[in-house]
Amino acid sequence: GDSVTQMEGPVTLSEEAFLTINCTYTATGYPSLFWYVQYPGEGLQLLLKATKADDKGSNKGFEATYRKETTSFHLEKGSVQVSDSAVYFCALRESNNNDMRFGAGTRLTVKP
Amino acid sequence: KAGVTQTPRYLIKTRGQQVTLSCSPISGHRSVSWYQQTPGQGLQFLFEYFSETQRNKGNFPGRFSGRQFSNSRSEMNVSTLELGDSALYLCASTEGIGYTFGSGTRLTVV
Image 1: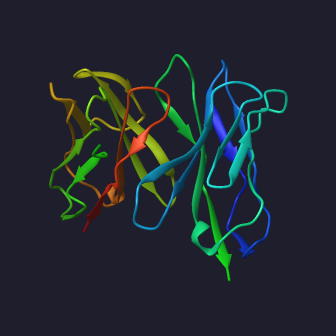
Image 2: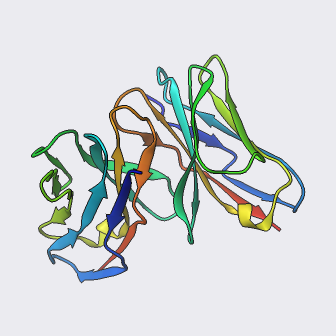
């Protein structure tokens, strides 16, 4: 079945460092891909999405490009802030199925 | 517009009891999905409702059930609670591609 694999955490970075969180997927069709962020005590918030190959999703300085050839959707940010500390989830959703599949989550801690 | 509202935020129940959680989706959203989040298993899909019909179901025992009302509000019920049911239960609504999540209900079974 469809699945998402993301890099294990935790990831600890200093403020203004470059961030990459790897995400790869397995899908039978042509899924939409997502990154969600979860702050302590909260639900998940949609960070960005891409619906087809070569699409780039971006929001709040975060970016991810839908790479069909490598089945990847890596999350990047050029300069992280302390306020970016959270758990990040990669997810996919097939076009013919409303079931959203999530990766295990990657905890990011940014130190001042 | 208002987001997804889940009530209550916190619950403590005893083993063997049952519990009902509520989710009010974003106005106009007809699809509501439920997820269980635990440190060990991560996010696991429970079920999805669309226009009062269960459209999709995850791999959970029959003790977990749900329903959706004509105003799209949804409830999930867990009967005969077990310690392992302690988790954050998240509800999400959608009327398109992405989900909007509520803040969740944290259930503790003692």
